[in-house]
Amino acid sequence: MVQAVEKQIFLRDADGGIIPFDTGALQTRLIGGFLATGLREESFMSEEIVLALEYTLLNSPRREPVFTRSEVDAAVVRLLESIGFPEVAHVFRRSGSESQLRIAVDKITVAGVLAAHLGCSAERAAHIAEIVADALKKLAFATAAPQLILELARHYERNLAEDDLLRDSELLPGIPQQTLTRKEIYDLLPDAPKKLVDEGVLRINGITTIFPSVRLFFFMKPFAKARGVSIPVTELEIEPLLYTAGNALEEARKAINTALRHPGELPCCLALPDIFDFLESFANSAPDQSLAAELASVLTGALNCELYHLAFD
Image 1 (cartoon, rainbow, N blue to C red):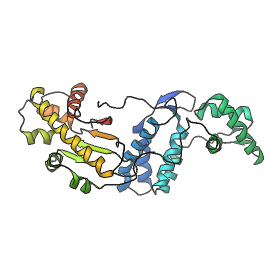
Image 2: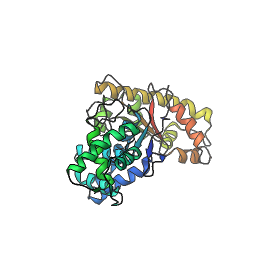
Image 3: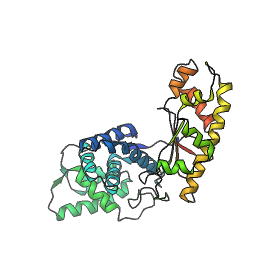
Image 4: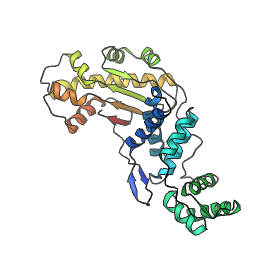
């Protein structure tokens, strides 16, 4: 059964409150980092980095999907550094820096900071706080910035075994580190999805090591024109055509997974960038989220996987 991801990720804010994870804001920060370092052409990778992080957090063994801002930022920095963009990582880290507030480094104060920001139990925070406070005492620190305390806490936390910790060693466990270019994907496609690509209806991004996934872009207006649908089009006319196209998408997805020779299934993402333009031009309909979702469900009906990400823009 195909369904969009429903599980919500939350962040623990600076005051200890819980807020939804804003992927758009994170992507904006990343784009700013690429632009600030003169890497305009590479800024497209911001979206893949956000998808990779979101996928990792959603599949974390942590019992509750609640993470601190510092955890998320640290994961982004590690990923940027691992894929060869340390200068972007530096700018990104600075863009999220907090005030230069300094606090006492006694065990009680440190434990309070960690309980609010580290995303662990009060008992575990107290244990880590004791280690951190002792380390700062040996360094002759009477006060320290919260960022330093959190970085030290994360360092010591990684040395403590616990099943629900977010591991640093591999961002995407079980995902193949193999790439495919768009041309390589096109060459391995069966006839039906290849025809959609030739018609300008379907675009399939290459497989990268940043976020290995099957990323499909389906353009409704070229599809409608190629099939010669009437205007205004009815659901009775368009839905059988979309179902047939959905079978072609599944053929493409299977071909890609087979080419990668991986026992599991890559996450599958689908975007319909012009769905609302299609509704206005071909169905004489105002932008309608529910109607767009209905058409998308017909298109994805043949996909034999869970649809990780669905976008209408």
